[in-house]
Length: 326
Image 1 (cartoon, rainbow, N blue to C red):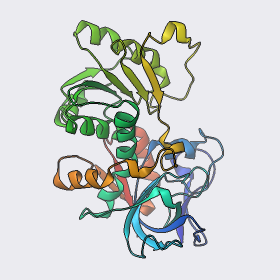
Image 2 (image 1 turned 90 degrees about the horizontal axis):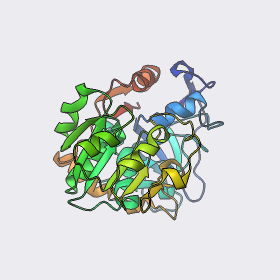
Image 3 (image 1 turned 90 degrees about the vertical axis):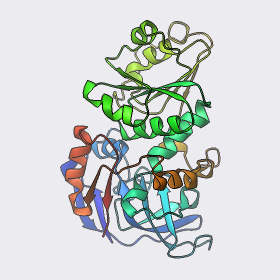
């Protein structure tokens, strides 16, 4: 099979197209013929070496058809999406024509969407849904602040929260992105300079919950801006991986505020966090109906992977991108 491997840790240019033996599914795995895969910042982190030693073939999600399922659960030819389950991290991932995936991380999809459209949904929508409704337990009518909202994950979170009937405060570092977030349904847009708490207080905004995609660099501020007994869930690291210096729960964690973390790359699809908890059928139906936007904003060919990573890391795409295979 054709596959894209990380030839060495480094920039986009280390992604190399090569031939590898076809993988064979073990018990408890499904062999998927990849038709398209979404692009994710996690893959850039793995390529660059930020996550240490990882699999040679990156890629944490894909859409395609079942090539073989030893259990017989999914017949050959079934349209599926696969997400996480160690792909790209502890096992070869979806930047290939074929990939084996733990069965719990493969879901049948019934949709008229094209391959690139199918591939643009699983990781960002499953992660956003888990953070909003699993960790934050967001309710209709509540106000949620989505920090890092112009990212693909942030846009999915804004869209899901608006669809759920929540009031959404979305943040961006660029005033030029206000219109994009308003189009997604955000009720307010704040310009994030790293200190949102004064803006929230001066604006008289009561924030029930924060979905923080920026991460450690703004964690103290996210905790400070939420209301008493509010909730904060961190699900991203757009601001970098450096730990929070001298974090002190006594000084930095307001009384009654709940802080949680959702590491989709490590837990989604496990028995404790089954992928079946995420209503992907409902999400795909809403994407197909136009209720939820999913993109992709740009589609690349398999052999354009280096350029795809360059665009992803430039931050200019403003949405989910995908790559078609074959």
